[in-house]
Length: 520
Image (cartoon, rainbow, N blue to C red; front, side):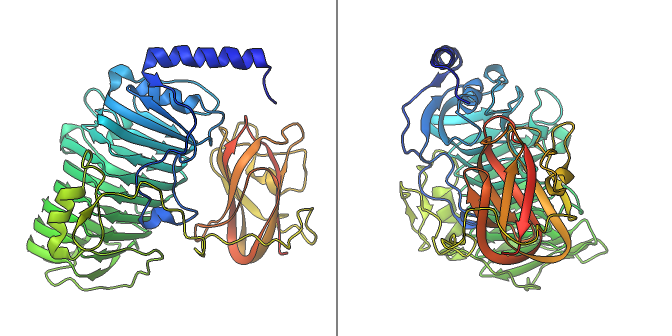
């Protein structure tokens, strides 16, 4: 329900006053976006466009970044936040609002979507302050430096991760960043780029990661295998002890990176992970590829790499190096197009392009840095992960048996007093609500079940709260359909064991009374 004009005007004046006090410069809505377009796995699952098409604002403090997030109409309203200056604990505080959930000791991107954070002007430095992405989707971070984030000592931030993602994160593109520490775990630092607890469709490109004990990981433990579909390309890893990255389950594509001074180990594929490792340049390093510190094997497909002054350990109970003559032990199919630079020119190309404040230059696959295309590349309309809607399907209530009745259910964090099972019990008086304005709930079966249509029913009194959602095949991560409000959605029939409703935008707290599924 819209607020009266007087109240809306009062809120707007309050926002302007807070903006002036916190370093937030407001701009008119415009079609702004990060330079260039997403690459790698971030182009899949519907693509990654961040705040394209939304308002652009300028922020010079962490509080202003949070204020920009909290000042949106809802948590899915697109926004581009241009950042200039040094962001630190002294100028970062939590801000409250219906479209945000922030914290004072980090830049918090939590339970939100459609956001770009891009460094401009003289540069953006997040000093001892990490960026935390949780239960969020369609996020772009570009042209920023994040340095010296600690998990122990003082001050602490983000568990010691420069950029960390966890809990149902989808479609993140991190590009032209510099992520650095000043030591390892004993000095208080943790990972530079971590993903865990169901984080998928991520690309890290043209970035520098250096001077840390840990480059980053995919999966927090051997059992956390819900992550994957991550691309690493044209990055420089320098003076890193290990985890460049550490892969636990999932699929990764690692190409055209320059690795120098990996002190203990490099790409650590374990716990069933699969990595395609193409045309990278490894030098002055140890054990740059293999399975290390575990007896749970990982796998790799290799080709076109150069190993320059690389040493290899002898195989052992918990050490399985890929060298000294690395050979493929699996195959990995890549669903997107990409252009490979020859490994011999990777050090020069990466030196000219990777990191913040490099002019966002990219490679064209011919060993020649280029200025980026200013227009983001839209996802391929023929991408099989984005099925076209069937115009012949009726939009009225579907017929047939509601397959959700008697099925199982689970989801992300739920509001107190609600239950996942309420969405498949056939009783519209009961409901599930996420802990915030966004979240996910799933219906699941013990064996493959064919689904071609769903009906999302909101509880009485909450109609219209859902503003945007996605239906996802949980097993493959494929987006089956998207919508702007509850009701009926159709898609080509698919056999699956679990279908997930991801609410990406809402007005207030949504209440899902029934998540009905049908074969046709």
